[in-house]
Image (cartoon, rainbow, N blue to C red; front, side, top):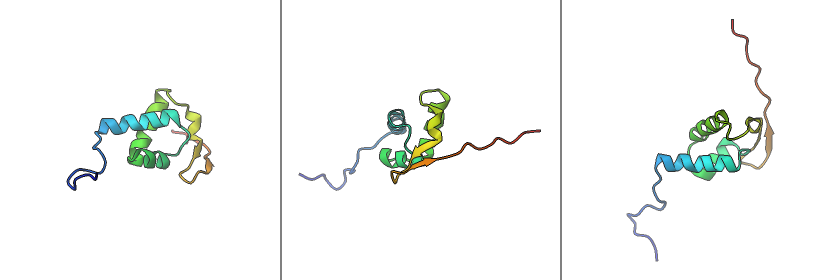
Length: 88
């Protein structure tokens, strides 16, 4: 039995549902990249970036995962921390 043509293929998710999905994904697998998490959760990268920063700030995930990520291609990427510029 197929769906009627006017029925959406995927159920509609509210912004709260999308955010909850990203939070669940990042707490379970914090090492995956923002791009890969966005593809899995079917959301934008910007939402994943915002949620990741919020989780790190609240200490719900470790910040060292920001230095080592597993990309969408499955490779492990290491990023060196940026040196902070001295402010006058």
